[in-house]
Length: 201
Image (cartoon, rainbow, N blue to C red; front, top):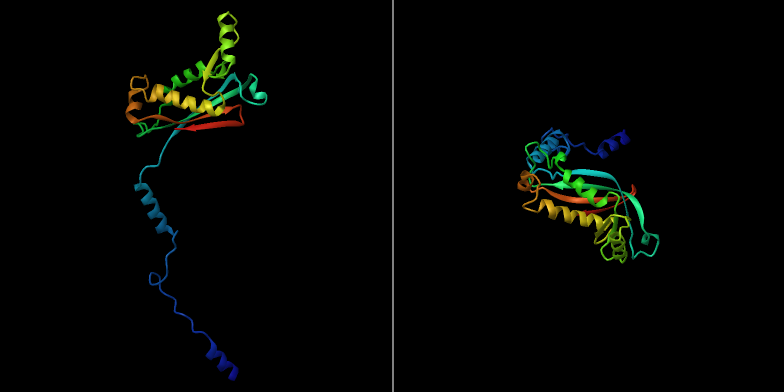
């Protein structure tokens, strides 16, 4: 009996279970909390939306004349280009841009990068090639850029197209695009399938 009495005296009294809503914290991720989070998100500022267009398989040659290895020699790759577009306001169809109206970009890429030889503007070979072309030697269509690596091409294409079309008040882009502030956000240049560089405005 003494042991039973001692056990009874040493037993910790249990706390009363609080009723729901009177002391119990509700789970932070319960149904009510989730619904409130969704409602707050829907009322918040619209998320940033951009769209992308990719042009693939442009074969052209280049060289990096300051390179200390084989890249200093004329060599070719199969190049691709990915463009990202942004705007201040999407159109009545909820489009950033209408992909069907981007033909001028395809024309630009074809003019500069379809079976061409792309060289740095300071490449000493450029002068020789132009002289040979003037003599009637149909060696190559030469395109001069500040830097003909993937990084340099991404920067040059981004700046050139934005300045020529999207920031030019007399360009032939749709007037709706100009009013909505359509711009090229980034250009990614793929040198074959495994290497690429991105320039972001």
